[in-house]
Length: 353
Ligand code: NAD
Ligand code: TYD
Image (cartoon, rainbow, N blue to C red; front, side, top):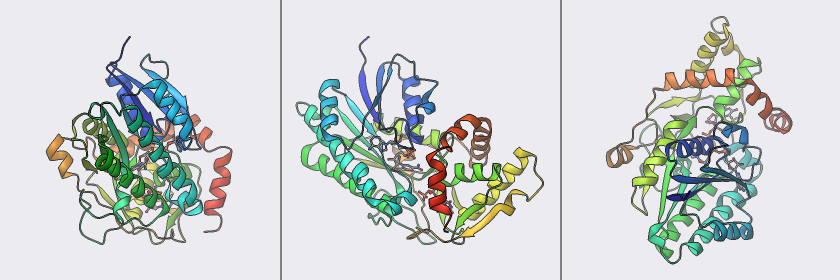
């Protein structure tokens, strides 16, 4: 069968990538989806069990830092489009090991840009390079205001600095070489298949196992939370409809202080686990703050709503319940990802706080 498009999705074995791969494979049987992932600690093919045998899906294990392997693959495969999500994505790990973030997020992205520029050189306009980025590139807000697409970049963590740098390279390849790029910057995602180093799955797992809930600082930092499947839907709309060279912000209009979010989570968990009122909240433990901890992120996604008609589909309370249910039901998935190296990571990250 010949496919209408052959789309490379990088980082498809990770949290957001696996939701995007699933959406595209199921919704577009006329596209061939090639998922390229190095399967780092965050990549897990178990995230894609339900679609792994579909005839329009293929997996390639490869590191985007390996420029030669990437160029060779691109020449062999002649992808028509790319949606790039592969990245080191956890702020705390970027504080421990910044160089790894430069390698994957900056060098890896430039390797993909070079390979795409080369294979598409005869007809740049026919192909799209979509770069998935974060609201963290804009830095930290005070009590008011929101990030728009024209907010100046002001990253503070090695993670956000590496993502900001990769965004700049993507724009430079549009301006300099005419590569048909699109960038989206999204707020904090939550949902199924998220590695339990990030706030929600980590705390769900800790509540379940009666471990302390390590709240950084006073818990007053604010994040805007979006259901991961709504992010995947936004990427779908932007991939198909956005003008080349454009940027879109994606967010949930759903700001929470960490402590309020954690208290709500504790309530939901008490109900689901049949615990007494207030039992899970007793696990809250205030620990040393994260270095350079951004106070507040808030995204203005009105451009996406106005231009392309996207809106979040799910109310947060409903999404949170669904998410808790998923982690409580998928005990084997959770047990697998929290065995082995995870224990070492956990000790290193939290023992001294
Ligand atoms: P994740 O850490 O769950 O997944 C990242 C994936 O990339 C993993 O499967 C990993 O194996 C793969 N990967 C890492 N290094 C690689 C390399 N060198 N070569 C090939 N593959 C490699 O991350 P996520 O939360 O799904 O984030 C995906 C993208 O979305 C990232 O670019 C991130 O910056 C961005 N983003 C994430 C959020 C969020 O809340 N999680 C919000 C906005 C934007
Ligand atoms: P995280 O999920 O790491 O996402 P990000 O740093 O990219 O926003 O963290 C979300 C918020 O929760 C952030 O303000 C840091 C805080 N946090 C804790 O208080 N304790 C923790 O153990 C973790 C992982 C995060």
